[in-house]
Image 1 (cartoon, rainbow, N blue to C red):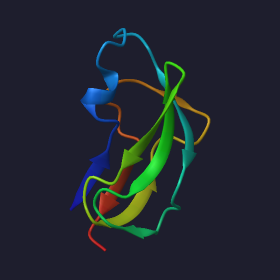
Image 2 (tube, rainbow, N blue to C red):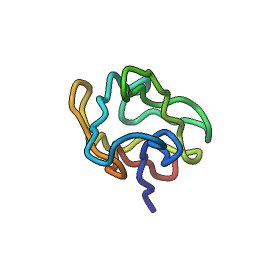
Image 3 (cartoon, rainbow, N blue to C red):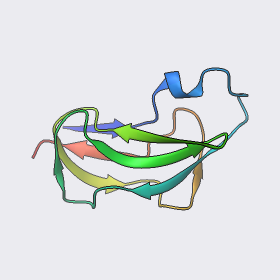
Length: 83
């Protein structure tokens, strides 16, 4: 079973609905096993750098947004699965 990695809604509070964020970098590579709450990516939203945490323990199996690409609110950045 996979689970999407998304930037939490709380990070978007007070941000215009049409604003995009930038995925600055992935902190782990696909295939890496991580623990819940571990930083897996860094994004920039309105000049603020935010770490995206793993939603659960498991393996990063797919990157859906590459470093340097922009994304919108609610868009999955990657996917995790059981390790």
